[in-house]
Length: 117
Image (cartoon, rainbow, N blue to C red; front, side):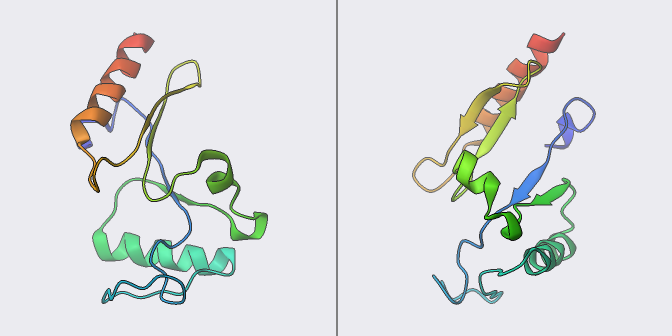
């Protein structure tokens, strides 16, 4: 997605841990319990950023407020949202058979960019 870095603002929101070791472990070599505080969630997000050299800004869905992003937007397991120039959700992408074709998100971003020109 580097091709969009100067044309759109991207952000990632880290929500509930999908495969927390105390809820739904899948045998990963990286195991975390479900965060019980904002600090816990921030620690996991920071670990991810460092381990992967992740370059998109990341926010956390605050545990202390009851995960409001998750409650409002139902992003689990993974979603892509495009907010257009009118500040409307113009695209909500969800996985298809366990994966996500990135050309769909590219098309949605290109369309939102064209509408702003």
